[in-house]
Every structure is written in C-alpha cells, then in structure tokens.
Image (cartoon, rainbow, N blue to C red; front, side, top):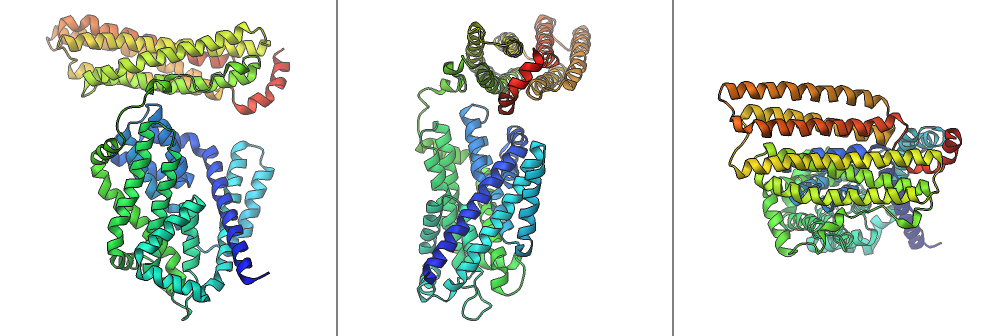
Length: 572
C-alpha cells in the first residue's frame, strides 16, 4: 500500500470514528438529559442574555449545536419561542459548541482504551436506561478521541510533504484562501467540530525545526473562520422546507458567523497575539491545539458580545431578507402525530395520542401564561389579542385529539387494559380543554376591564400573580404525574389545590377590605371574584388530570409498546 493511500485511509477512518463517536455521544446525552435541556431552553429565554446563556449551556452539555438548533426551530415553529428569543439562543449555542474543540485539546491518549472499556462495560452490564446512556456517552467519548489519535498519527508524514508545505505557505500568505479551505472542508464533512479537530491535529505536527507548528496559529485562524462559515451553510440547507421563522433563525446563524469572520480576518495577527497571551506557554507544536480551541472560543464570545445588544437589528435584517408570513401558520395547531391508519392497532395509536397530548400540554401551558400576561402584564391589550388567537387554535387541536380517541373507542379492538388507558387519556384531553375554556373566561373579564379602562390595583395584581404561579405548578405537576406514571405527585397536587382554595378565600376577603378602605373600585368585585372562581376551577381540572395517574393511566412510551402484552395479561 502506498504512503498516500495509507494516509487517506487513516484519515477517513479516523474521521469516521470521530463522527460516529460525536453523534453517538450527542444522542446518548440527549436521551440522558434532553428533557432537562428542553426545559432550560423554555424557561431561560426571558431576555437575550438569558437566552444566550441557555443556548451556551444546552449546547455545551449536548455537545451538538445542531441538536440545540433543532430544538430552537421546533419551539419557534410551535409558537413557544419568539424569533428574538431563538436568535439569542443561537448566539449562545455558538459559544457552547466551542467546548468540543476545548475537549479535543486535552492529551488523553494514554487513557483512551480504559475509557472505551469502562463505557462499554456500563452500557453492556447496566440494567437501567440511564446507566446505559451514561455508558454510551463514555464509550462514544473514547471512540471520538481514538478517531483523533488515528488522524494525528497518519498526518505526521504530511508535515514533511513539499506539496502540503507549499499549500500551507499560500494559505498563510492569503487568509481568504484559508477561509475557503475551512468552509469547503465543513461542507464536505457536514461537521465543524470534525474539521476543527482535523485542523487541531494537523497543526500539532512539527515543522522542519521540530518545535514550531507546520501551519502556525496565524495560518490556522483563517481556516477556523472558514469552518464557522461552513457550518452555517449546513444550517441553511437544513432549514429548506421549514417555516419562515425557522429560515430566519438559520439565516441569523449565518449572518452571525459570516459578519464575525469578515471582521476577524482583518485582525488575524492581533487575534493570534491575544490567543497566545491567554493560552498555555511552551513549544508551539505542544500548545497550538489549545490555542486553536481558545481562538474558536474567543471568536464566538466576541461575536456574541457584539451581536447580543443588536438582537432587534438582527431581527429586522432577517425579516427584511425573508419577507412575509407563512401561508398556513395555523398548521402548527394541526395534529402532528395522529394517524388514522393505526387506529386498528390500539397500543401504537395510544402512543400517538400520548405524543399529541404532551404537545397539547405545551400549548395549554402557553395559553395559561398568555392569560396571566393579559391580566397582569405590561402590555395587556397585545397579550389578550395573542391569547384569543392561541386559545381558538388550541381548542381546535384538542377537539381533533378527542375525536381521534373516540374513533379508537368505536373500533371495538380494545382490551380491558387498553380501554382503561384510552378512557384515562380522554379524561386528560377533556380536562385540558376545560382549562383553556376557563382561561377564555378569564380573558373575557380582562377584555371587559380593558374596554372600560379599568385595571387591577397593585395588591390585586400581586394576588393574581400568586394564583397563576400556583396554577402553573399544578398543571406541570399533573402532566408530570401522567407522563411518568408517578402516583406520589398526585398527593402534592392535592396539597397545592388546597393552597389555591385558601388563596381564593383569602384574596376575596382582602379585596372586600380594600373596597371598604376605598383602595379598590367596588364595581371590580364581580370581575375579581369571577377570575378567582375560574382559577379555582382550573385547579380542579389539574387535580382531575393527576388523579388519572392513580388509576395507572399514563402517557404510553415506546418501551411500553413492546411490554404491553405482558401488562395486558396481568390486567386481565
């Protein structure tokens, strides 16, 4: 085998191991922590700074900016996250993805095989799903570094190749060529993490003097900038066929990296000096891998700090480039999982119903939040209008889910166990629909107040906020009880329901006291008590959802689809 063939085979084989390890590690991390990461994204996007921190944290944990982007685009498409929030999260994700390059800079070649063995053992022997996932993370982490070691070993002969030395000289003297090389590599491999790992390995090869890098930091930075541009092209391709806001999110990602690269390319010597200053000292060949990782992190942190205050400007730019609205934005409120073809197969159908109801739960939670914002927020008129649009769409979606469940009943193919599950899920859907109806009643009161030019006093608004916080907690707990089949949560729901009942009684008395002291308008009494009444009924609906868990009703998952025959036999 010729030297060129050996190098080529080693390079593509090492790259394959790296990509497999990276993807497997990301998948296993998402299984182990994906739900928590989604919740972080949901709750930490109140402002651009928090959104960027959320994107950075989630991407650093999942080791995949693509996974974060997919989540963000899903939230945007579902109406659970605004475009400005999504853009701030994408900015943070760019910082988070630099953690991969930082990991690559560690020299752990002596520990690769023990890491692979420990990960394999945990995955092979572990009984619980969580243990298996953690084992796969460790195993994949070892494979990832083994791929890097293979690429590093086969690249050593390239350092002395006249062709590559000539090419590197051209790249070092013409930064734009390096940018094009980096972008082209990422487009071919479809992973900026992989191409940066290749760059780190190649740069770690010694030049003729044995201590200097074959390419040097100043020559590596343009390629690094090209890698960042290349990964945005991948995101743009992935957004084809998505909603306009999804395309705008991908476009913002591209503008972020392209604009940053355009600025940085003029200051490469200065950037190189700064990175050398903050990086470990030593022979260049020994520290350049860390220097490249630090350059990657520096680039994304600086770009984020520049763009974060300019999120409104970025929104205007992407809105100007991609104009108009989606032709059928209401399609997001159409069932995404229900399929009439599987109605004759009860357990798969129940699985689809479970997935759709979990999706509906997100919308109901948003509806509850909009009702709260309309009543106590800074812009009640806009929030109330948004609530009305959301409320109508969620009602239609829940109607379609209920209709599907009724058709499943009418099929006559259900066992006793399946009938119990179906009836329970129907009750969950009905209670969700009643919650949205109660929110609608609160919205009507809010509309009347706005039309009459009335508003809650500061004390009354604070009391309403307290009640809404209780309702959010109750709803999340009740959905958690059905999702996890956790009967213990039901007791907590009952306790929190009592808190709601006491709050209703206490706040009604407090309102009457304020009326007596002429702090509150007496004409607001009917409105105030009506809102509290509907809140109390929403709490009852949350209890109704949670109580289904006491009857062993829960959202069906894929594992239970396989285990169901055994469950059926015990039920009968």
